[in-house]
Image 1 (tube, helix red, strand yellow):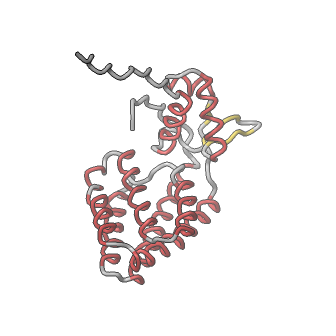
Image 2 (cartoon, helix red, strand yellow; image 1 turned 90 degrees about the vertical axis):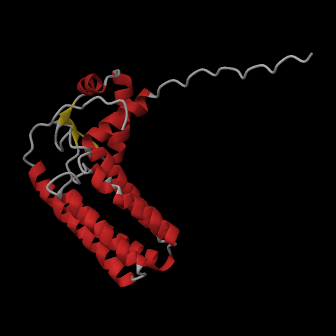
Image 3 (cartoon, helix red, strand yellow; image 1 turned 90 degrees about the horizontal axis):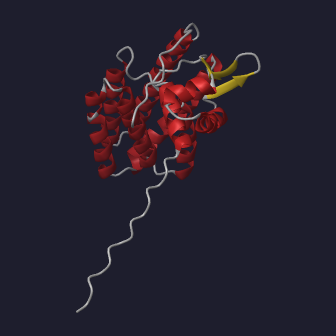
Length: 238
């Protein structure tokens, strides 16, 4: 009689990547406004707040400095980067130009299936209005789908670079009614796309970027005077 097949070997669990975990938590704390621009940080404090040793925190800090999210100053030490007015203006000017172009191209080249997928994400926004992390993720996915729908690899590359830079800034979607405004703007963009109206789609996308810029500059003015921030909340996931 044949022997039953041997069970598959039990593989050991992959070790936790504490450096990545520390990076994710510190980055999310900055993006969610828990660590304010200009706030002074230390390895010891971050390790205690995140719940890991200083070595993975040091690795995370190195990555965040390279990305521009944290800044090391000879006098003040490590701080959360505070973008200046001109940097924000330049960033959002490019966002307006590129997203406008993406919307125009998407009106010409995107499929109805792509529009349906975008619509599903947009209609999920109101359910996430009170959750900064969930709403920010939805927003990034909506914009990412618009970029892909343009079907232009070179434009996509430029948009991904702009998007990655904006993603390092704290989300403002849950402040001052911005969530509902952005949702309405997303719906207007999609409506123009479905009509295959490139002019209207571009104008709606550019208007959306201009509105985001106004909120970002207002936030920047408030952030200059912000001396302290809430501690990093330890979380098990996003």
